Structures are given as structure tokens and as C-alpha cells.
Image (cartoon, rainbow, N blue to C red; front, side):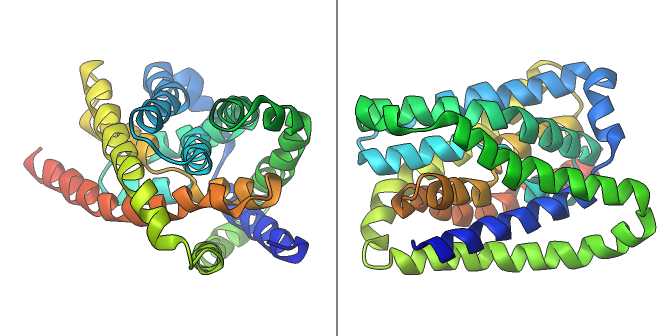
Length: 286
């Protein structure tokens, strides 16, 4: 994409992250201390297990290097505001979901460049990895992700009523922008979208299903409540695909890297329906 398109994508994600910041408070970060077991399990699933699953899948299933890198970018990203909504609708622990999103969004600023650098070196070449400016990527992620979130949180703290009223509008705008970004990416790559779907469809579907399932099963194996387990499953399987697309387009200047995230978005929302139905059924049975 050209510089104008990249700028639009970057600004769009900043608005999306600002909207997420409007829903966050300092107490969401305090839960790291108050509920360390649930937070730790959720973060390990999301930050460690998910990239391992992604790497295993693209290693076992032969896919082109650019698609493999796109899947790894996606696996490196945290959950987004969408995961909080899905956790709420699925009768999960919404506070835990929000807290995991908040903490992971900060931590991944530093883990994303490491995972992307490794992926480019492994699936393309060491020369390409050498050209990756990790510090520049961290600065871009801070500008696009952390700063808008902090501004949203500050507004929520200083003008709570206004922020709450504004939150719904910003979320609607965020959703529209995200849809437009995804549609724009698919349109840009329309000539290759069917081959890309054939190449990325299976690994992205497996990434979603496996991460959701393992997230829930691991949480339950550590005797977490069902509501907590549902939230951890959602945070493990519902990634911030908007961020993945933005990294591909804005930071790495390669739209092909974003195809896996665009396809994952469609799969993610389909699986979210089943998570919501399962969570609601469990709630009725309790």
C-alpha cells in the first residue's frame, strides 16, 4: 500500500486502541496482584503457548513463507477489545478478560518484535531479519497502541461520565474502521485471495480452535472457575487481528503478511458464536 493508505490504517488502529482505553481503569491492572493465578495462566497461554502453536502449525503444514510470517504475527498479538465483548456475551469473567487484554497489550510491545524477527529469519532469510529495525517497531507500537490506550484511560479517569458516553460511539467507529481495513486489505489482494485462503485457511482455523480449546482446558486443569476459564479461552483464541494487519501494512510494508489476520478474523467470529452459546449454556446449568 502507499504511504497515505498506511497512514490511514495506523490512525484507524489508534482510534480503536483509544476506544479500548476508554473502557480501562487502573483497577484492571491491579488484578495482576489480586488474582495472580488466573492472570498468570492467561498470560502464559497467550504470550507463550499461542506462538508455539502457531510455529508448530506452519512448520507441520507447508505454507509459503509470507503466509507463515503472517500467522506468527497474528499469534504474537494480544487480545483486543473484541475479546472483552465476547467474554461478556459468553458469561465469562469480563473483569479478568479486560485485565488480560490490558496487561498483554503492554507486554507484547516488546515480545512482538522478537517473534517477528525470529519468524522472518526462519521463514525468509537472515538478511531480511537484519533489515528489521526492532527499536523502530517498538516505538511505532508504543505510538499506535500504548499512547492511545493511555489517553483513553486518562480521559476515563478525569471525565468518567463523558468517557462512558463516548465509549459506545468510539466502539461503533472502531468496528466500522476495522471492517473497512479488513475489506480494503482483501480488495488489495483480491487477485490472490482464493489461493491465500487455500494456503492460510487450514492453519488459521487450527490456530483458533486449538488455542481456544487448550486455553479452556489448561485453565480448568488449574481449578479456575468456569467463568475464568471461558475468559482465558477467549483471550487465547480471539486475537487483535487489527493490530496484526497494521503491523503488516504500516510497519513491515507487506500486505501479504496481513492476509492470515484477515482470514483469521472471519474464522474468529464464527468460533465466537459457539463460545457464546457454550458459555450461556454452562451458566444456565450452574
